[in-house]
Length: 172
Ligand SMILES: [Cu+2]
Image (cartoon, rainbow, N blue to C red):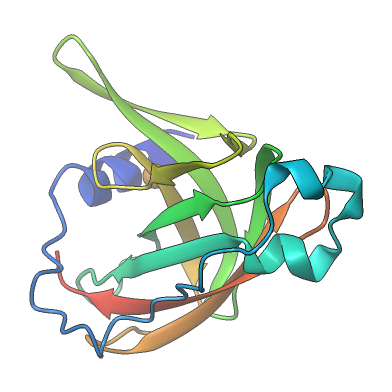
C-alpha cells in the first residue's frame, strides 16, 4: 500500500506538459453532435453502440516516466453526451497489468492518494483527468514506453459499455 502511495506521489506531483503534441498526433475521438434529443430518446432506447459513440474521450495522454518505472498515470477528458449518468468501473490495456482510478488531493501539506472504485460522469457533463487530481493509474507496465507511442485502452462502464481510447505517450 505504501509502495503504491509513493509511486503515485512521484507520478502525480509534477504536471504533464502535452503542449508539444500537434493536433494530428492527438488521438481525438470527437464525434459529430448527436441528432438525438433527450425528449425523443429514453435511456432504455439507447443501444450499447449508441452509448459508446456518445461518450467521447479526447486528449488522452500516458505519462512517460524514466525507464524502469513500474507504473504510470493516464490522463484524458471524458464527455458524457448521453441523457443518463455513466459510471466508469474499470479499464483494460495490453501495456499494463491492471488499471485503477485514483484521486490525488492535498490534506494540509500532505498529498494523499485515494483509490476510487468508480468514476461518475453525470448526463451531459464532462470530466477532466489531470495531474494532481483524478487519474487512471496503469500498474505494472508490461513494456517500456517511448515518446509519441500511441497506446490503446478500453474503459468500461458499470452498464457494460466499452469505450475505446487511443492515448499518446508524452513526457511530463
Ligand atoms: Cu495514482
